[in-house]
Length: 115
Image 1 (cartoon, helix red, strand yellow):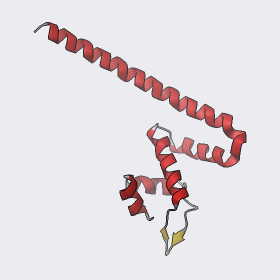
Image 2 (tube, helix red, strand yellow; image 1 turned 30 degrees about the vertical axis):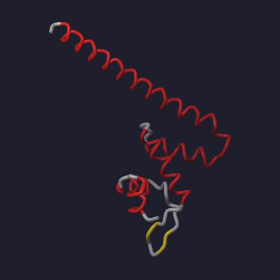
Image 3 (cartoon, one colour; image 1 turned 135 degrees about the vertical axis):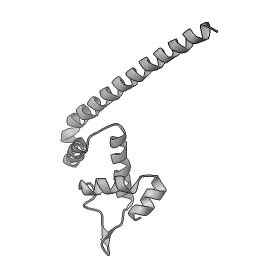
Image 4 (tube, one colour; image 1 turned 90 degrees about the vertical axis):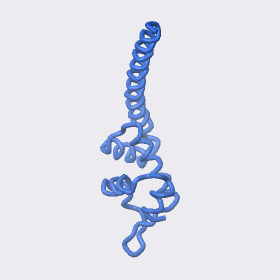
């Protein structure tokens, strides 16, 4: 698949894929006539990168994480630590959202009791 086909099939913006390419995540993708042709393993990598991006991981940390993967099981503890840090950040954001929802619910309650 080429970049446009991937974008349409998997609903990933072309510019996002290009950003990943520019960061060197897809240097090993085979090319035909100067155009990258993504295989299943590349699409799986893109899916994984999108997951990391969606949890808020920085490009620098993504690169580090991919490096850890390439180094094998000796880096499991580093990967666990990294994912745990991002998990904690997400939990804190979720907690903040739930607190905001509680406040809105309270305001709604106050207004309904005035009716």
